[in-house]
Amino acid sequence: MRYPIGWEIASCHSCSDPKAPNVFVDFFPPGEKNSDGWVMVEHLADKPSDMSVDAWFAQVKQTANLNARIQEQRFDLNGLPALKVRYRNPSEGGYEMECVYVVSGSRTFEIEFSSDISGSTIDSLGNYPTYLQMLGTFKVTNPQSERSPR
Image (spheres, rainbow, N blue to C red):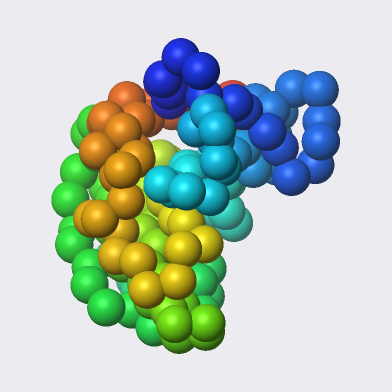
């Protein structure tokens, strides 16, 4: 995934290689990290081989994020099946987040855009267009052997 110059990469595991397997990677804009939203990419559990992509998406959208679902759209992201789901966290005035679930072979990835600004909608955040550009560059390299998004 390509990201703008000046954005910082961080990992929840504080590892030296944010592209290592089983690490989720945060992309933060310069300045106030919570002001206009940030992006996170995470490798989720693999899709069971005996489950269809649609059935897997139905399960993942309910278990990966427990907030109320307010909108969803199925589409292809660079040739991979994807599901975009908008959620609303009801606490503290509520805020929205958008998660895109992508399946490559059996691997499942979540690309999330969110902010901690109460009462905000995703579309109103200044970094939403940047997130959409980043999302458009998401690719999975060598789906059979490599275990991390690019």
